[in-house]
Image (cartoon, rainbow, N blue to C red; front, side):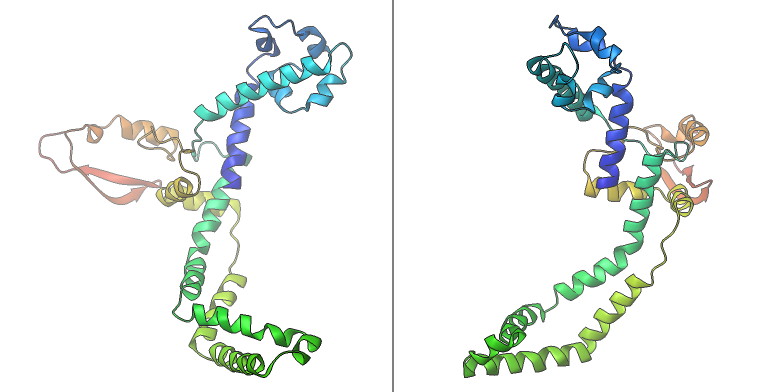
Length: 265
């Protein structure tokens, strides 16, 4: 989520850098644009990155004017953000895109460990484990234990033996194996992450849509592929609506698609 939001923020700033500072005077508000330019503010992106107090510190700009300018910049930023979609492609390995692909790759790689943890947390033993931990609390302090009644001491002793047996049994073995698997998991570099993305991009897009719905650009039928290969695929007849297709094998990370409806090509 953080990586995708960071990439969106970078793309928003990129678009805002194309909007000149003069746009804040579109409604003839009388802002001192020349003063802003002389102070180093040339685009809406520059304005969006500063605080009201920083603008108000410029000679000739009051707090009220600074607040009004900042509000206009924020509104423009929100409008750009609402309509922005990110597109991942092996042809555009920007730092932000690389960070996102790396995060999605790591997330995908760690899923088996996460699933094992979920199974342990939702096991039939879970409710009794929580109760046993609660019953052990009197034993965490010598003074508290001294003033604990006989019944609660008995419950604490039973909880201790139950949890000890659980750790020594199958449940404990699975938990230790899961922890060891996570701790020994090797972290792949960004090049390995991009390679994984190029060979099989669909899981990346699925995960991104799950964790940050609506942020992904999905209008391109071959998104994620190298631009040249994407154009080649789009020019072929198997993207016609009256074609029935099946997939098999790979070519430069893309699925080979074959027409199976007779006479459509």
